[in-house]
Length: 193
Image (cartoon, rainbow, N blue to C red; front, side):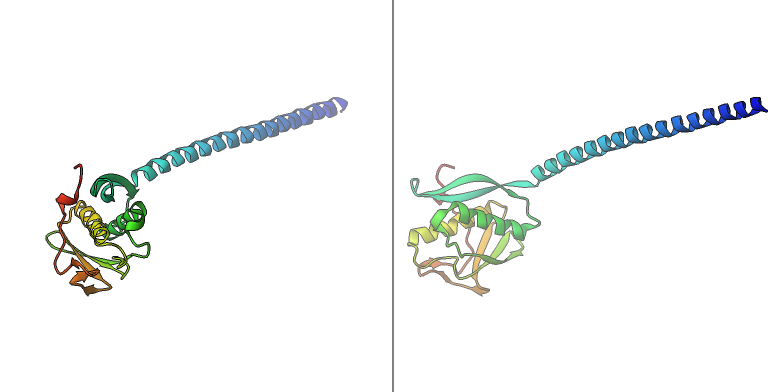
């Protein structure tokens, strides 16, 4: 009987040792697996971040703008990069804001495009608020402001630009610019092209 009790004890000790070794193996295996999963997740996150950066970089679009240069007494052509807009309406509005920011005092800071309309044959109607042409500007500044934007819009693939003020078809911009018809790109104003 004593031998049987000793054998039972050995069996119990062996079983407990096996269970303990199993628990230890399970604990370290889980820890190792969790570490590997964490590394995999970190790799995916960094890969996703790199992909997001690549996508962000491709969401830029180059545009041609025409800025008035006092020294050259005309418009100069520049290439700029903008966030890729959702559609043509937003692209024209974005480029207008870019021109305002690059042109200093030539554009009235309160000038805004209210609407953009497209017609066949490359015609575009631009509806501005009343601040598009500032009456206090000289005639030269008014013309350079107007053609800076007209030439820029025409560089986007449009052939004719009609300026409207608050949904009204206007015949004059300011006191001296005939706006009764469409404006077209004026290559004579461009210097150094």
